[in-house]
Image (cartoon, rainbow, N blue to C red; front, side, top):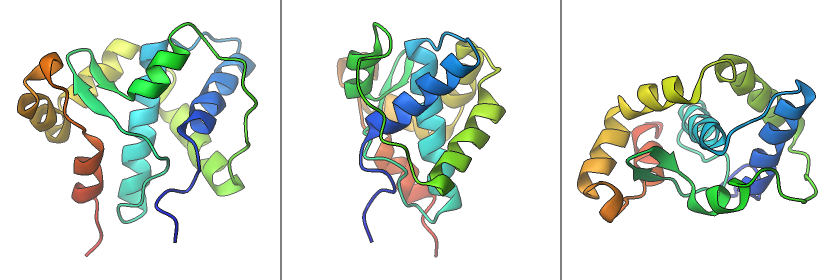
Length: 145
């Protein structure tokens, strides 16, 4: 079994960007980061620790960041073709969108920063000076017995 369900984190990020566009909504780079992080965590929780996408999230002062996605999407949606995720993943992403898209970036950041996983990773990395990967903690926390 592959380590992740989708082959590229870009496909999930593009899915969220396109979903926002269908609602005529601008999706800020920081909010995209929070949605990706929440999707990874929830998917892992629901699937015995299996990762949704090959993303590496790090704990920074502003919140969890997937550095590659952040760098590419900071200026908006890049000109890339979306590889549609399998229907089961698309249904899951739609669920994530409906649950979290109406919240502000600040609210999502506050909620995420209150999680022990984020706080522990941020503390271990001394904040922005040496960001620590959060992803491994998500998977460890949600492993099935």
